[in-house]
Length: 218
Image (cartoon, rainbow, N blue to C red; front, side):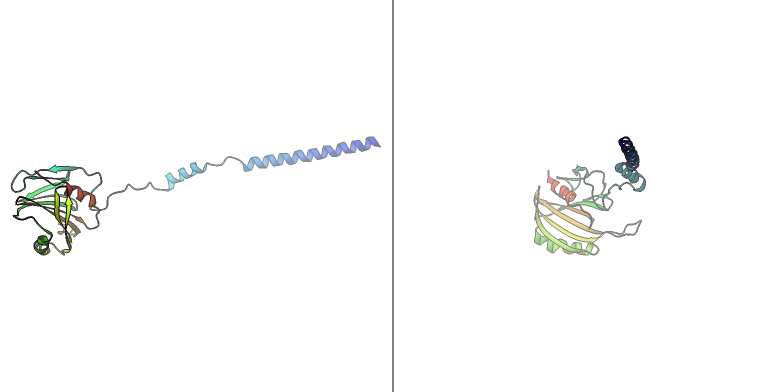
């Protein structure tokens, strides 16, 4: 009787072991299936970026903006009334001279330099009463004149800012709304007017400061 009981117990233990082993094998197989390698998120993203997304476009300057890396060169006139001073202008701009006025132009921006004889130095009052009315009759849709005295490396100088329409483009027929800065430098009966102009929305504060600060008498 004891032998029979022991045999039954052993058989029971064997059955439990077999069932446990089977369960373990099933669990191991299931774990293997759920932990199988999957594509790396970074690799998947990289692949999607190159195939499904266009590269970011190269930034460009808005119309009228002078590039930050613009190179400037010294302009030293040697003939006529345009003598006795130097001023920096952007390298590569087209140059034209007519009488005592020289202009440097690139796309929508212009630097115009004019030399005149003037016994007295310009003042805020004289520019307001004489220059502003003259420009009002010459510049299309002249507006927002503001006259002030500012400091530049050459000393105190009268600055006139205003707005006006550009001449009609001979090819496109378009007219651009321009912003102007006019500086009147004076010494010993000689006056040099430096006028900087470009589209109203252009950010040329630093380039125009570079030019106006560079003016020097020789």
